[in-house]
Image (tube, rainbow, N blue to C red; front, side, top):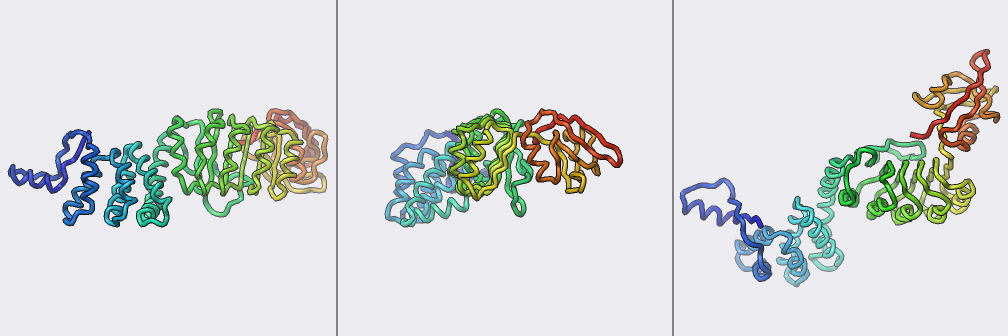
Length: 377
């Protein structure tokens, strides 16, 4: 393995050869033996400061091989040894080598579980100071694989104040399951949007441990009931959107136990209206928005003749059917329209792709429109 000669030794070589080196030279040395590692650990409590420093440096240079040994030594009675062992683990936890970094993190976590021991307290503080470093590194890797920070813009129903730390993984994702493991280090992540058929039940396990995750949006995924069960373990989860994903009535029991939810929106799923009613009964404090998935793309306000169009979303089904701002929508598929809430309800009974008839007043002109409904974007 590649090892660095400690600074003091490098300076000595420079002096004896008459050459001044700017930094130590890299040399290849055999991996440290267990006897060497134990010897360096023993020197962590030496009387001379330089011996303790060189022993610490040697342990750092030995890398992943020392982690098990320094973790055990940190639990001993010496405060000096404990502090230096935690320092070694801290530095190894910053390594670019994923195996070394992961093993050192796990070791710090193991020590931190003993909150009564000095080394455990030091390890706990170390984990807190390192978490944002790990989060930044994880975020860098996720973005490199196609994730988008700030993706999944605020949707109706996600009623949060201020900006959220959000992430979207969609069509541009090119990572493998190993890359998804980086999600667990996004300790401050509050909202995640997962898009595409590649998002299946197995993806949901990678959300575990995200204690600040408040909102999950699943869109056109292949997630089913088993995957939804993973969401039950998220302590801060309050908003769930499931759009055009194949969950059905077998998922109702799992959704019905998510008592912390403030909002659950199911658009274009295979859950039946009876299943949605069972969820509503089980979660009386949760706003349940159940729709078959059609999207018209208008806003309107009450009018004595119907509902006057105040907004038409560009590119929507309404825009394609030449419905205009100022039009008065009188009937939707034969049903009288009186306000936006009423219109939303009747649209919710249709699926994307359905064609409906709409009766409209435009000034003095009476129009009948055949509208091919779209889907939520």
